[in-house]
Length: 314
Image (cartoon, rainbow, N blue to C red; front, side):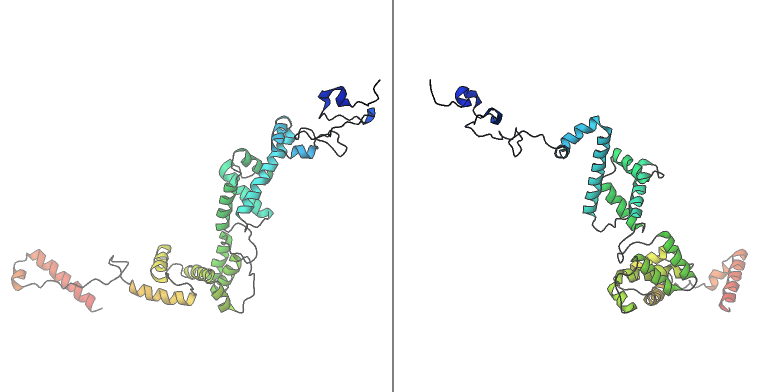
C-alpha cells in the first residue's frame, strides 16, 4: 500500500485550474485559484460575488433594458437625459445665470414655440419638449440668446442686458416729463442690473463704458425729439453723421443734429444728396412774342405776373 498522499489533481486531472473550495474537505489543492479572465468575480475570500445593484445601474445598456419593463426606471432614465442636456447647455453658456425665473422663461419660450402650450408647468413642459426632440443644448441656447436680447432674463450684477419693454417705457416717461438726465441714469443702471463697481464720477463711467453710454444717450435723445425726428430720419442721421464716433453724449448729439440738418435742408424736396438745386432764369419774352399771343393767353400771363409781383412784396 502506497503511503504517498494523493492530491485532487492526481485523482482527477480535469480539476487542474478549477476554482473549487476544498477547505471543508481537508484537502489542499496544489493550484492557485484565478479570476479566469474576468468571468469570475471573487471576493477577498476567493468566493464568487455578484455585482452590486449600484454597479449594474451604472451601465447604460442595463438601464435601458430595465426601462423597457419598469415605468419608474424609464422615468428615471428620461430625467437623467434631461439633466445631461442641461449640463451641456451650461457648459456652452457659462455666463448663464441659473435662477428659477430664467428656467421658467426658457421653458415657456420653447413650449410656446414647439409644443404650442404656454400654460404647462415647467416639469410637464420639459418632458413634452424632450418627447418631441426639442429639449437639446441647441434649442436651449437659441431660447437663451433670444430672451437675453429681449431683456427678459436675470443676469449677474454688472452684466449688460437689453432693457425690457416696460423699462423702456419708464425711461421714455421720464424723458417726456423733462427729466432726461435721470432717464439716462436709469437706462444705464437697468442695462447693467445695477453697477458692479464704483466710479469716481459720470466721466469715469462714460470712459469705461463708452458703448453703453452712447446707446443710452442716443435712445434718450431720440425720444426727447418726439414729433421732430422719425425713426427713418434718425437712422439716416446715425449712418451719415454719427458713424465712427465711439463716445456720444446728448450735448454732442444736439450739435451734430443741427449741423446735419442744415446740410440736408433741401433733402426732403430733392434727391441730389441735399445740395440746393441751381436756379434757372426764365426765358425772356420779346414784343413780337406778346403780339402773337391770343387774348386768352395774354390775360393768363397778365394774371400770373400780378401774382408773382404780390408774392415779391410780402
